[in-house]
Length: 375
Image (cartoon, rainbow, N blue to C red; front, side):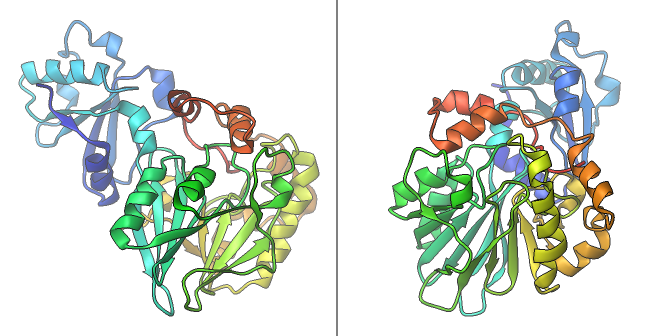
Protein backbone atom coordinates (compact mmCIF):
# COMPACT_ATOMS: atom_id res chain seq x y z
CA UNK A 1 0.00 0.00 0.00
CA UNK A 2 1.44 3.36 -1.09
CA UNK A 3 2.05 5.82 1.72
CA UNK A 4 0.12 9.04 1.15
CA UNK A 5 -0.27 12.50 2.60
CA UNK A 6 -3.52 14.47 2.34
CA UNK A 7 -3.77 18.05 1.11
CA UNK A 8 -4.94 19.00 4.60
CA UNK A 9 -1.85 17.48 6.23
CA UNK A 10 0.52 19.10 3.74
CA UNK A 11 -1.23 22.48 4.05
CA UNK A 12 -0.82 22.48 7.82
CA UNK A 13 2.91 21.76 7.48
CA UNK A 14 3.34 24.67 5.10
CA UNK A 15 1.10 27.04 7.10
CA UNK A 16 3.05 26.13 10.26
CA UNK A 17 6.29 26.83 8.36
CA UNK A 18 7.68 23.35 8.91
CA UNK A 19 10.62 22.28 6.72
CA UNK A 20 8.94 20.56 3.76
CA UNK A 21 10.57 18.75 0.85
CA UNK A 22 8.69 18.34 -2.44
CA UNK A 23 9.60 15.97 -5.26
CA UNK A 24 7.49 17.20 -8.18
CA UNK A 25 7.36 14.65 -11.00
CA UNK A 26 5.37 16.73 -13.48
CA UNK A 27 6.94 18.04 -16.70
CA UNK A 28 9.35 20.95 -16.33
CA UNK A 29 7.05 23.48 -17.99
CA UNK A 30 4.13 22.56 -15.71
CA UNK A 31 6.39 22.91 -12.67
CA UNK A 32 7.74 26.28 -13.85
CA UNK A 33 4.22 27.60 -14.38
CA UNK A 34 2.70 26.45 -11.10
CA UNK A 35 4.10 24.66 -8.07
CA UNK A 36 3.69 24.21 -4.34
CA UNK A 37 5.40 27.04 -2.50
CA UNK A 38 5.98 28.07 1.09
CA UNK A 39 8.52 29.91 3.21
CA UNK A 40 10.21 26.64 4.20
CA UNK A 41 9.46 24.54 1.13
CA UNK A 42 12.34 22.99 -0.84
CA UNK A 43 11.50 21.49 -4.23
CA UNK A 44 13.11 19.13 -6.70
CA UNK A 45 11.52 18.78 -10.13
CA UNK A 46 12.26 15.52 -11.95
CA UNK A 47 9.71 14.49 -14.64
CA UNK A 48 8.12 11.09 -14.20
CA UNK A 49 9.31 9.86 -17.59
CA UNK A 50 12.91 10.25 -16.38
CA UNK A 51 12.15 7.91 -13.47
CA UNK A 52 10.28 5.13 -15.23
CA UNK A 53 13.35 2.87 -15.14
CA UNK A 54 14.20 3.68 -11.53
CA UNK A 55 15.00 6.44 -9.06
CA UNK A 56 18.77 5.96 -8.81
CA UNK A 57 19.39 9.22 -10.67
CA UNK A 58 17.85 11.32 -7.89
CA UNK A 59 18.54 9.47 -4.65
CA UNK A 60 21.58 11.60 -3.89
CA UNK A 61 19.38 14.70 -4.13
CA UNK A 62 16.76 13.51 -1.64
CA UNK A 63 16.90 14.16 2.12
CA UNK A 64 17.35 11.23 4.46
CA UNK A 65 16.11 13.07 7.56
CA UNK A 66 12.88 14.55 6.20
CA UNK A 67 9.76 13.25 4.51
CA UNK A 68 9.78 13.33 0.71
CA UNK A 69 6.37 14.50 -0.52
CA UNK A 70 5.89 13.32 -4.10
CA UNK A 71 3.62 15.45 -6.30
CA UNK A 72 2.14 14.94 -9.76
CA UNK A 73 -0.88 16.34 -11.61
CA UNK A 74 -3.60 14.03 -10.27
CA UNK A 75 -1.93 11.67 -7.78
CA UNK A 76 -1.26 8.60 -9.94
CA UNK A 77 2.30 9.04 -11.19
CA UNK A 78 3.33 10.17 -7.71
CA UNK A 79 2.08 6.87 -6.28
CA UNK A 80 4.30 4.92 -8.65
CA UNK A 81 7.36 7.04 -7.83
CA UNK A 82 6.62 6.75 -4.10
CA UNK A 83 6.50 2.96 -4.42
CA UNK A 84 9.85 2.99 -6.25
CA UNK A 85 11.37 5.15 -3.53
CA UNK A 86 10.06 2.74 -0.91
CA UNK A 87 11.72 -0.16 -2.73
CA UNK A 88 14.94 1.87 -2.83
CA UNK A 89 14.88 2.20 0.95
CA UNK A 90 13.15 5.57 1.30
CA UNK A 91 10.59 4.78 3.98
CA UNK A 92 9.92 8.52 4.35
CA UNK A 93 8.28 9.00 0.92
CA UNK A 94 4.61 9.99 0.64
CA UNK A 95 2.40 10.60 -2.38
CA UNK A 96 0.11 13.66 -2.26
CA UNK A 97 -3.48 12.47 -2.61
CA UNK A 98 -5.17 14.09 -5.60
CA UNK A 99 -1.99 15.71 -6.88
CA UNK A 100 -1.88 19.36 -7.87
CA UNK A 101 -5.53 19.28 -8.85
CA UNK A 102 -6.46 18.31 -5.30
CA UNK A 103 -3.95 20.80 -3.88
CA UNK A 104 -5.64 23.58 -5.83
CA UNK A 105 -8.91 22.94 -4.01
CA UNK A 106 -7.76 22.94 -0.39
CA UNK A 107 -9.01 25.76 1.85
CA UNK A 108 -7.37 26.47 5.20
CA UNK A 109 -9.25 28.77 7.64
CA UNK A 110 -7.21 31.17 9.79
CA UNK A 111 -8.72 33.39 12.47
CA UNK A 112 -7.78 37.03 11.87
CA UNK A 113 -9.33 38.55 14.96
CA UNK A 114 -12.34 39.17 17.18
CA UNK A 115 -14.89 41.83 16.29
CA UNK A 116 -15.67 44.75 18.57
CA UNK A 117 -19.10 43.65 19.77
CA UNK A 118 -18.68 39.91 19.57
CA UNK A 119 -17.98 37.53 16.74
CA UNK A 120 -14.87 37.05 14.62
CA UNK A 121 -13.45 37.24 11.13
CA UNK A 122 -11.63 34.37 9.43
CA UNK A 123 -9.58 34.18 6.26
CA UNK A 124 -9.85 31.04 4.12
CA UNK A 125 -6.45 30.58 2.47
CA UNK A 126 -6.38 28.61 -0.78
CA UNK A 127 -2.66 27.87 -0.86
CA UNK A 128 -2.65 26.10 -4.20
CA UNK A 129 -4.40 28.91 -6.04
CA UNK A 130 -3.48 32.02 -4.08
CA UNK A 131 -7.15 32.81 -3.45
CA UNK A 132 -8.38 34.38 -0.21
CA UNK A 133 -11.98 34.41 1.00
CA UNK A 134 -13.57 35.61 4.22
CA UNK A 135 -15.98 34.34 6.86
CA UNK A 136 -17.47 37.02 9.12
CA UNK A 137 -19.62 35.83 12.03
CA UNK A 138 -21.61 37.55 14.74
CA UNK A 139 -24.50 36.45 16.96
CA UNK A 140 -25.25 33.26 15.09
CA UNK A 141 -25.06 34.77 11.59
CA UNK A 142 -22.32 34.77 8.97
CA UNK A 143 -21.35 36.68 5.85
CA UNK A 144 -18.95 35.11 3.36
CA UNK A 145 -16.95 37.15 0.87
CA UNK A 146 -15.41 35.95 -2.43
CA UNK A 147 -16.21 32.28 -1.83
CA UNK A 148 -14.41 29.58 -3.80
CA UNK A 149 -16.50 26.91 -5.55
CA UNK A 150 -15.72 24.36 -2.79
CA UNK A 151 -18.76 25.46 -0.82
CA UNK A 152 -18.67 22.50 1.57
CA UNK A 153 -15.68 24.04 3.36
CA UNK A 154 -17.71 27.11 4.35
CA UNK A 155 -20.85 25.11 5.09
CA UNK A 156 -19.00 22.72 7.38
CA UNK A 157 -17.22 25.60 9.11
CA UNK A 158 -20.54 27.38 9.69
CA UNK A 159 -22.00 24.18 11.13
CA UNK A 160 -19.02 23.74 13.45
CA UNK A 161 -19.41 27.33 14.60
CA UNK A 162 -23.16 27.00 15.04
CA UNK A 163 -23.95 29.93 12.74
CA UNK A 164 -26.27 30.44 9.78
CA UNK A 165 -24.93 31.81 6.51
CA UNK A 166 -27.08 34.87 5.83
CA UNK A 167 -25.06 36.93 3.32
CA UNK A 168 -22.75 35.83 0.49
CA UNK A 169 -20.88 38.56 -1.38
CA UNK A 170 -18.59 38.73 -4.40
CA UNK A 171 -16.54 41.93 -4.54
CA UNK A 172 -16.50 41.67 -8.35
CA UNK A 173 -17.09 39.26 -11.22
CA UNK A 174 -14.13 36.90 -10.91
CA UNK A 175 -12.04 35.82 -13.90
CA UNK A 176 -9.47 33.50 -12.35
CA UNK A 177 -11.65 31.14 -10.32
CA UNK A 178 -15.24 29.94 -10.30
CA UNK A 179 -17.26 31.62 -7.59
CA UNK A 180 -19.16 29.50 -5.10
CA UNK A 181 -21.23 32.50 -4.07
CA UNK A 182 -24.54 31.74 -5.75
CA UNK A 183 -24.46 28.05 -4.80
CA UNK A 184 -23.54 28.86 -1.22
CA UNK A 185 -26.34 31.41 -0.87
CA UNK A 186 -28.87 29.02 -2.43
CA UNK A 187 -27.88 26.13 -0.17
CA UNK A 188 -28.03 28.32 2.94
CA UNK A 189 -31.14 30.27 2.01
CA UNK A 190 -29.08 33.45 2.18
CA UNK A 191 -28.76 36.54 -0.02
CA UNK A 192 -26.22 36.70 -2.85
CA UNK A 193 -24.68 40.10 -3.57
CA UNK A 194 -22.79 41.21 -6.69
CA UNK A 195 -21.92 44.73 -7.93
CA UNK A 196 -24.54 45.66 -10.53
CA UNK A 197 -21.96 47.16 -12.92
CA UNK A 198 -20.31 43.74 -13.14
CA UNK A 199 -23.66 41.99 -13.53
CA UNK A 200 -25.04 43.45 -16.75
CA UNK A 201 -24.73 40.12 -18.58
CA UNK A 202 -25.57 37.68 -15.78
CA UNK A 203 -28.43 35.24 -16.25
CA UNK A 204 -29.53 34.96 -12.60
CA UNK A 205 -31.12 37.03 -9.87
CA UNK A 206 -28.89 38.79 -7.35
CA UNK A 207 -28.94 41.65 -4.86
CA UNK A 208 -26.89 44.64 -5.89
CA UNK A 209 -23.81 45.36 -3.78
CA UNK A 210 -23.92 49.14 -3.62
CA UNK A 211 -22.06 51.87 -1.80
CA UNK A 212 -24.16 53.39 0.97
CA UNK A 213 -26.13 50.21 1.70
CA UNK A 214 -24.81 48.72 4.91
CA UNK A 215 -25.06 44.97 5.42
CA UNK A 216 -25.55 43.90 9.04
CA UNK A 217 -24.25 40.60 10.37
CA UNK A 218 -25.93 39.49 13.57
CA UNK A 219 -27.75 41.96 15.81
CA UNK A 220 -24.57 43.62 17.07
CA UNK A 221 -22.94 46.65 15.51
CA UNK A 222 -20.87 44.53 13.15
CA UNK A 223 -21.40 46.02 9.70
CA UNK A 224 -20.12 45.50 6.19
CA UNK A 225 -19.86 48.84 4.39
CA UNK A 226 -19.45 48.64 0.60
CA UNK A 227 -17.16 51.15 -1.10
CA UNK A 228 -17.25 51.45 -4.88
CA UNK A 229 -13.66 50.89 -6.05
CA UNK A 230 -13.51 50.24 -9.82
CA UNK A 231 -10.37 49.43 -11.76
CA UNK A 232 -9.84 45.68 -11.71
CA UNK A 233 -13.40 45.51 -13.01
CA UNK A 234 -15.85 48.34 -13.60
CA UNK A 235 -17.99 47.17 -10.69
CA UNK A 236 -15.28 46.26 -8.17
CA UNK A 237 -16.48 47.10 -4.68
CA UNK A 238 -14.43 47.02 -1.48
CA UNK A 239 -15.85 46.32 1.97
CA UNK A 240 -15.10 47.88 5.33
CA UNK A 241 -15.86 45.41 8.13
CA UNK A 242 -16.30 46.51 11.75
CA UNK A 243 -14.47 49.78 10.99
CA UNK A 244 -11.28 47.73 11.15
CA UNK A 245 -10.80 45.63 8.00
CA UNK A 246 -10.73 46.71 4.34
CA UNK A 247 -11.57 43.85 1.97
CA UNK A 248 -10.14 45.04 -1.34
CA UNK A 249 -11.06 42.17 -3.66
CA UNK A 250 -8.60 42.13 -6.56
CA UNK A 251 -8.01 45.88 -6.56
CA UNK A 252 -5.16 46.07 -4.04
CA UNK A 253 -2.85 43.31 -2.83
CA UNK A 254 -0.10 43.28 -0.23
CA UNK A 255 2.78 43.41 -2.73
CA UNK A 256 1.04 44.48 -5.93
CA UNK A 257 -2.09 46.01 -7.43
CA UNK A 258 -4.92 44.62 -9.54
CA UNK A 259 -4.79 44.38 -13.33
CA UNK A 260 -7.54 46.02 -15.40
CA UNK A 261 -7.36 43.86 -18.53
CA UNK A 262 -9.21 40.61 -17.77
CA UNK A 263 -12.36 41.83 -19.51
CA UNK A 264 -10.39 43.38 -22.36
CA UNK A 265 -10.87 46.85 -20.90
CA UNK A 266 -7.37 47.84 -19.79
CA UNK A 267 -7.28 51.19 -21.56
CA UNK A 268 -10.82 52.03 -20.45
CA UNK A 269 -10.40 51.08 -16.80
CA UNK A 270 -6.88 52.27 -16.01
CA UNK A 271 -8.09 55.70 -14.90
CA UNK A 272 -10.68 54.08 -12.62
CA UNK A 273 -7.95 51.92 -11.09
CA UNK A 274 -5.71 54.92 -10.49
CA UNK A 275 -8.57 56.92 -8.98
CA UNK A 276 -9.41 54.10 -6.58
CA UNK A 277 -5.83 53.54 -5.46
CA UNK A 278 -4.66 57.14 -5.39
CA UNK A 279 -7.85 58.89 -4.29
CA UNK A 280 -10.67 56.73 -2.90
CA UNK A 281 -8.45 54.59 -0.68
CA UNK A 282 -6.37 57.55 0.50
CA UNK A 283 -9.51 59.02 2.06
CA UNK A 284 -9.78 55.98 4.33
CA UNK A 285 -8.04 55.46 7.65
CA UNK A 286 -4.39 54.38 7.42
CA UNK A 287 -5.10 51.94 10.24
CA UNK A 288 -7.51 49.78 8.25
CA UNK A 289 -6.21 46.24 7.77
CA UNK A 290 -6.16 45.39 4.07
CA UNK A 291 -7.51 41.92 3.28
CA UNK A 292 -7.18 41.12 -0.44
CA UNK A 293 -8.86 38.36 -2.44
CA UNK A 294 -5.51 36.95 -3.61
CA UNK A 295 -1.83 36.70 -2.86
CA UNK A 296 0.93 36.12 -5.39
CA UNK A 297 4.08 35.55 -3.35
CA UNK A 298 4.81 33.28 -0.38
CA UNK A 299 6.50 36.26 1.27
CA UNK A 300 3.03 37.72 1.78
CA UNK A 301 2.11 34.92 4.21
CA UNK A 302 2.44 35.78 7.90
CA UNK A 303 3.67 33.25 10.45
CA UNK A 304 0.15 31.88 10.87
CA UNK A 305 -0.31 31.62 7.10
CA UNK A 306 -2.66 34.59 6.79
CA UNK A 307 -2.29 37.52 4.39
CA UNK A 308 -2.93 41.11 5.48
CA UNK A 309 -1.32 44.53 5.83
CA UNK A 310 -2.06 47.94 7.31
CA UNK A 311 -3.28 50.33 4.60
CA UNK A 312 -0.90 53.10 5.65
CA UNK A 313 2.04 50.71 5.45
CA UNK A 314 1.13 49.71 1.91
CA UNK A 315 1.38 53.33 0.79
CA UNK A 316 4.96 53.22 2.05
CA UNK A 317 5.96 49.79 0.74
CA UNK A 318 3.78 48.76 -2.22
CA UNK A 319 5.45 50.08 -5.38
CA UNK A 320 2.14 50.07 -7.24
CA UNK A 321 0.96 52.86 -4.95
CA UNK A 322 4.00 55.05 -5.53
CA UNK A 323 3.83 55.93 -9.23
CA UNK A 324 2.97 59.62 -9.22
CA UNK A 325 3.33 60.13 -12.97
CA UNK A 326 0.03 59.21 -14.65
CA UNK A 327 1.64 58.12 -17.92
CA UNK A 328 4.05 55.83 -16.11
CA UNK A 329 1.14 54.35 -14.16
CA UNK A 330 -0.79 53.75 -17.36
CA UNK A 331 2.16 51.97 -18.95
CA UNK A 332 2.70 49.89 -15.82
CA UNK A 333 -0.84 48.49 -15.83
CA UNK A 334 -1.37 48.15 -19.58
CA UNK A 335 2.03 47.00 -20.89
CA UNK A 336 4.17 43.95 -20.10
CA UNK A 337 1.35 42.29 -18.19
CA UNK A 338 1.75 38.70 -16.98
CA UNK A 339 -0.11 35.94 -18.86
CA UNK A 340 -3.84 35.93 -18.35
CA UNK A 341 -5.39 33.24 -16.12
CA UNK A 342 -6.06 29.87 -17.70
CA UNK A 343 -9.58 29.61 -19.21
CA UNK A 344 -10.42 33.08 -17.86
CA UNK A 345 -13.06 33.74 -20.53
CA UNK A 346 -14.83 30.47 -19.72
CA UNK A 347 -14.56 31.23 -15.99
CA UNK A 348 -16.13 34.68 -16.49
CA UNK A 349 -18.97 33.12 -18.50
CA UNK A 350 -19.50 30.50 -15.80
CA UNK A 351 -19.65 33.23 -13.15
CA UNK A 352 -22.19 35.07 -15.34
CA UNK A 353 -24.36 31.96 -15.54
CA UNK A 354 -23.81 31.64 -19.30
CA UNK A 355 -22.01 28.30 -18.88
CA UNK A 356 -22.71 25.45 -16.50
CA UNK A 357 -19.74 23.07 -16.79
CA UNK A 358 -19.62 19.75 -14.99
CA UNK A 359 -17.55 19.55 -11.82
CA UNK A 360 -14.53 17.88 -13.44
CA UNK A 361 -14.49 20.50 -16.17
CA UNK A 362 -14.62 23.23 -13.53
CA UNK A 363 -11.59 21.65 -11.83
CA UNK A 364 -9.69 21.64 -15.14
CA UNK A 365 -10.63 25.26 -15.84
CA UNK A 366 -9.07 26.37 -12.56
CA UNK A 367 -5.75 24.54 -12.93
CA UNK A 368 -2.80 26.91 -12.66
CA UNK A 369 -1.78 29.93 -10.58
CA UNK A 370 -3.84 33.08 -10.06
CA UNK A 371 -2.79 35.95 -12.29
CA UNK A 372 -4.88 38.87 -11.07
CA UNK A 373 -1.97 41.12 -10.12
CA UNK A 374 0.37 43.45 -11.97
CA UNK A 375 3.84 41.94 -11.97
